[in-house]
Length: 289
Image (tube, rainbow, N blue to C red; front, top):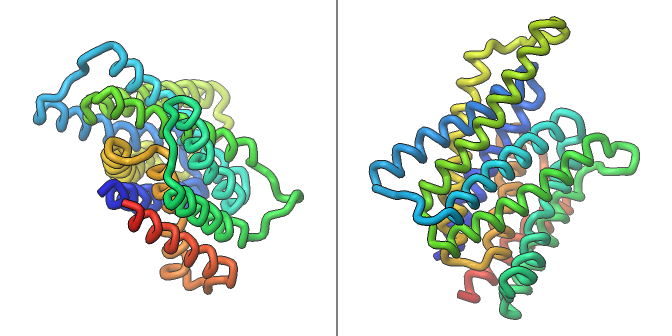
């Protein structure tokens, strides 16, 4: 059952990635937009926490939620910054590393192992995803923004591990998400306020998008983000961290399908091979259950 929730997380995170890539090319205040993303997540999680009577049972629950907020702030900021400075395909490649980190660290921290069939499925999915990612024109001459892609990968991996840890602690999901979105939203709000203060003094940068339009856009993007987090935490609760992270990373497939369906771009041979491999890996994982 975990694989269904992981695929849902991939779908929602794929929609988020499409919107991130689109907004990164617009002349808007990135921090204000991301504040909107986290604000709507905070509101939804808080309402759900109250309605479902969820709470924090120990300081460990609080610490994990706060750490996830810091990690989410860092990963989302780095990803959006990378898309604005570098080639989208390069940032996508680097930001796709978390599953590898998660598998290794989950083994080191929790001694979480995979069966032979699960390991084969993981490897096939990972190879398929990277075949798709490397099908784009990447060379040493266009590595702008690479540092942001690597930072995004690191913090996304840490956040996946923290998400898994919250389920190991049996923390209430919406209580955890309330802290995560609340802390992340506060950090983006402070970053926006600091940037706005500097601009009011120097008038060095003017955005084409108004504050209200930028914030509203963030609210829409945030709906996909909170849905993705709900799905992936549910998957972490019943599945191995590395496998859930790998399947969720297949959000690149939805971004790829979007570009083909709406932008009318043809599949390359490498992309067809990568897509087929990723789907075969999913089937193998499904049969291993």
